[in-house]
Picture 1 (tube, helix red, strand yellow):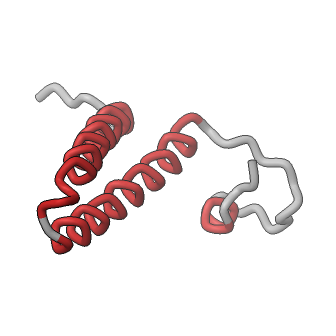
Picture 2: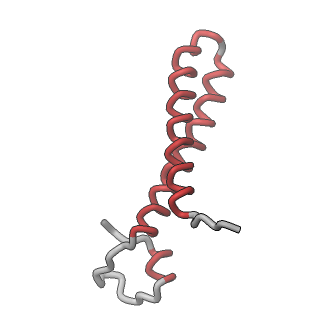
Length: 87
């Protein structure tokens, strides 16, 4: 897996070809970023389909279901990344 430049810079790695193992947290943050992007893309797709009229309702419903599943995955990852603080 190629390491994004932003992660290499954050960790001070100057050699772009140097092997770098991603931590569990970094992997989760990358997954979170991808899931959020997919969620936004589905928002755009749903809006475009709804503008086309009622003939696209089945596809809109399918996209909304997929969007909800993404939201659940996002919430699970965010919960894992956020430490539980008991006051």
